[in-house]
Image (cartoon, rainbow, N blue to C red; front, top):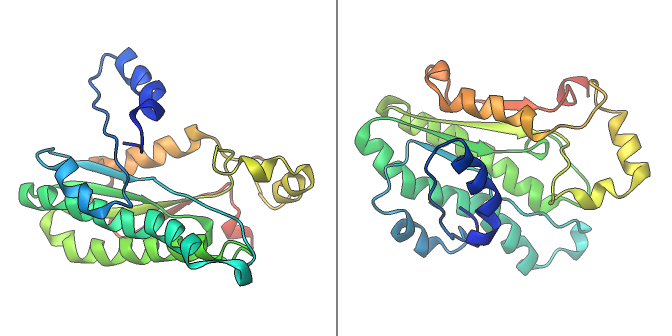
Length: 211
């Protein structure tokens, strides 16, 4: 899913190249009333909540509109997407939800107050839902990526001084890649993690353990 199907075409082509079927859904999870109708009738066994937005701003300049934009996408939208999908999971007695938390779920980052608040809330949501649904076959976990170069974070990496300083704080001495996330998501989605729920796995090259 994405807000436009065009944004998904590259991923869809990669899936089709593997001989798999793919269905694209144009879905804006801030439109909570549209979520359940859009997902109705789909038997979804694995949900990865990875929609996210960020906007760097001094906290004294954060507006209600900016706060709502970030929190509604990262937290409110994730909850109501999960709610819509989990109804089917609970009825079938199985399912795995994987939320994308963040280092800001654990540490404070200046000028990222709305983002950090949303990601801290997402970790709380992960723990609450995992406890509520553990006895009904649905597991809820999270991953907390460290510093990854993505479309969302590219603005930071354009600042060479920032990138050099941040790299010095990562024990492995490198930024993360998409491949570093894939294995963790597959693990948490699979029966290999059948006895794991309510957990958040940091994928950060050792950053959190070193501070």
